[in-house]
Amino acid sequence: MKIKEIAKLLNAKTFGNLKLLENEVEFAFSSDLMSDVLTVKNQNVLLLTGLTNIQSIRTAEMSDVINIIYVRGKKISDEMKELAEEIGILLIECDYSMFKASGILYSNGLKPIY
Figure 1 (cartoon, rainbow, N blue to C red):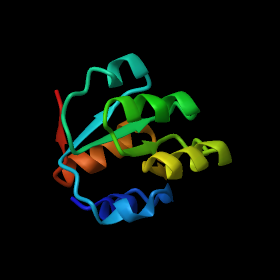
Figure 2: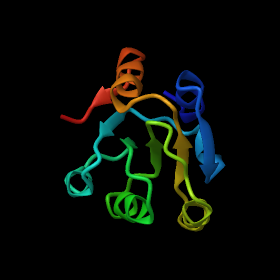
Figure 3: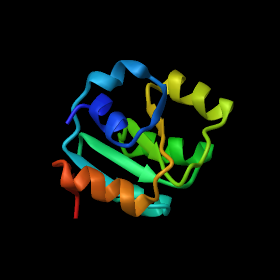
Figure 4: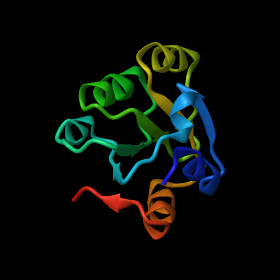
């Protein structure tokens, strides 16, 4: 599924590397524990989290995750937007809960990692 379709399904706003909106993803992973994110070894992954800070972006970068959805209406700071653009990560703000956003994506064909 294309990232731009995901953003539309979730009524979300996008920031960072907007070129990635045309990319396809196959898998999604939901977690607020960045130590769990470090266990992700799949390519082509979308991360859903409520942890809005620089560490979530750095952790995603270490795990080769280039698409992050921040759920529960969490707002992305200017500092996070700048870092995302600098390292080539797409950030998405979503007002839905992690459960609802995950359910929408699962029901539209995204696969879980585990």
